[in-house]
Structure formats: C-alpha cells, structure tokens
Image (cartoon, rainbow, N blue to C red; front, side, top):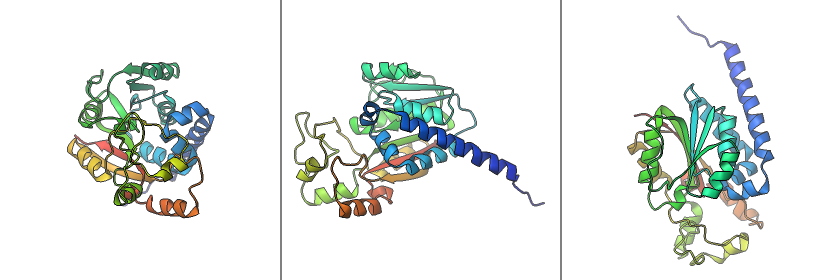
Length: 278
C-alpha cells in the first residue's frame, strides 16, 4: 500500500521554520556592536543571513525531539549562545568559558555558565546531559582538540547533534600565502605581534593584534577526528572573507573568495553539523 505524506504536516513544518527564521533574524539584528565584534561568527551571520538560515534549518531538522539543554563551548559574552538556543527553542542554555568576566555577562543573559579551561578540564556535567553542543571559533585557541571533542562526545546524548566552526588551515588564502613564503594569519607564533604575515592583511584589517590563535585544522582532519569519536557528519558549509575586511579588498579578491569558498575545504572558515552515533 502506497503511503502519502499529509500536506498539512509539510505546511506546518514550513510555517514553524519561517516563524523561527524570522525570530532568529530579528534577534540577530538586535545585538550591539560590542557583541558583534566579540564574535566572528556573529559578524559572519549578520553579513550572510542566508548562511545563518541554512545552518539553523539544517540543525532544526537534525536535532532530536527533546530540546531540554544545549551547551556552548567557549560562550564568551553569550550572544551567539542565546541566539541559537532561543531560535532552536531550548529550555536551558549552558556555557563554558575560561574568562570569568565574559562568563559573568553571559550569565546575565540567562545562560548557566561555568568557568573552565576547555582544552584541559573535565566538563562539570553528567554523561549524556545535553541534546546539542556548539563550538564557534574556540578550537583555534587550543593546542590540541583531544579534550574538547572527547568531552563533547561524553556530555552529548546519543543521536544528539553538534555544530563546530573553526578557521581552515587548508583555505585558499593559506595555500597562497604559504606558496609565497608567508605565515598564515590564523597561526600565530608570538603574543608580541604578527610576524611573517603578508602586508596585505595589515592593509585590509584595522585590528592586527595577536588573538592567541595557535591552532588551525583542515576540514578533512576535523571530520576524520569527529568520525573517530563517534560522530557522523551531516552537513558542512564554507565561509569566505567574513567578517568582512575593514577596507574593501577589491572586486577581484571578493569574486575569487566567493567562488572558492563554495567548497568548504578551500574556504577561509568552515562550519560542520554532526550527529553522535555511538
């Protein structure tokens, strides 16, 4: 006997997605300059709302039916954590950050925050405590990712989801600067300044201070490591020169970046959606 999908279910799902996206965009637009500049991902989503909508909708479809608790690893001031948790209708949003002052601001937003070193410390949660966990722009600042990924696996429920974003070691920009003998921007060698970086970077960006970026991971390496830890990759996105440079990089560079960043393995930054399978 042939089965047919109830059209009212499709209409309802589309309506919920539309309302959810509208609410998420309104919340995204409400953040001030301090929040936006403190999070590269917020800058990314504000400048590319289609990407934000795609990530939100794909995550919505992949999450389990329960939406009790989510965790943001490296929550900072909590704006991005609040944006995703609220848009995805989670009852409780938890955050971990090593900076006590930032965690304090996040707690004022309603997050339940904990001050921990993500690279070294065991997370203060029971096994399988969360339905969803995120990490945006944090892995760049950790020597290796053994602890955060293994702890993420431990505290996320089976069939729960994770979203991870980080800079891409094998981006088209890094491949080019290495070919020319320059240091990739997202691999710093000192806290005292940027050394070996091409002068074009300092021309395009007003902020040229070290940001403690000591690690960068290719898309292939992170996906293999997530598979090794029991996660299945559901979707991946590539992002370009976002947050946008302070000064216009020119039509040629923007065109090249837009074209090459459609392939996540070449993008400046990537976002991965994965599900815990075991």
